[in-house]
Length: 110
Image (cartoon, rainbow, N blue to C red; front, side, top):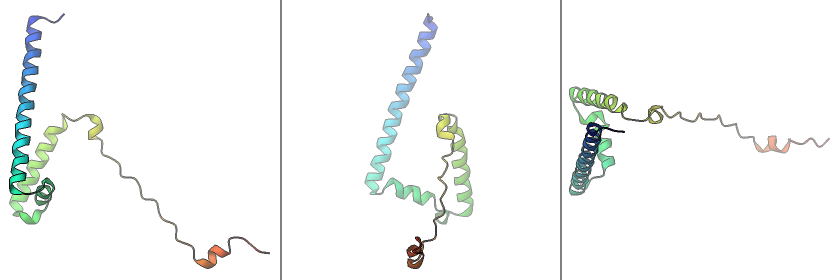
């Protein structure tokens, strides 16, 4: 049976979760509003920040360091399945196409 102190902790966790959820929703609205106001697509922003030609070498290095730092910090919150790298399917080698003469000789007429 949970004690009164335990119940208070759970209530605090629920309250914190709700606050975080509200903040997340507000940030999402703000970001979507900014995209809409600027008339840009989120993919364009991603492409811009993925291209080193838009930054000085020092800024690019700092951006990549921050990206790496945040990626490692957020990894601990992801499920193990999401952490496993998706294996790319191996490409099968295509067979060379047979020419007309080779296709016609597949059955011997002797």
